[in-house]
Image 1 (cartoon, rainbow, N blue to C red):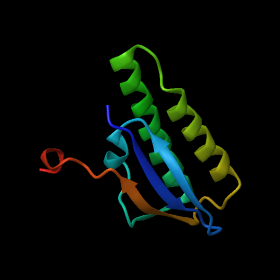
Image 2 (image 1 turned 90 degrees about the vertical axis):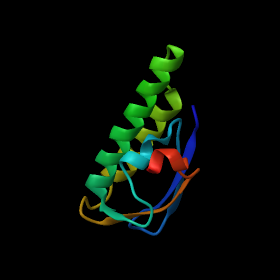
Image 3 (image 1 turned 180 degrees about the vertical axis):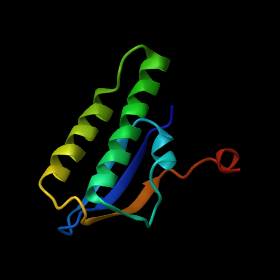
Image 4 (image 1 turned 60 degrees about the horizontal axis):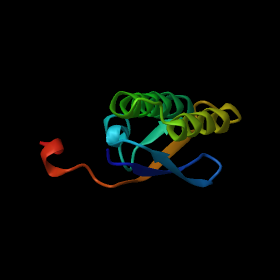
Length: 101
């Protein structure tokens, strides 16, 4: 199962590199897009919960790193204006060509 990193810029200008154990982030976020904090938190935590579940199905246990990343995003989002923009700066690795088609 390929893991990935996604980089975001929070409304206060802080840049954060985040981790997912699955490429599922590509289903929920788009590079270059801005999302209100509340929507970003919802999309990212939903994707990370899906990623954790994919690990559970494949290996028999939840991915605690995915759960921890989702919790960090929830905590970081809680102190911000829910309408302020979060920009997705990068996601790597890219989707395989056969998945994009």
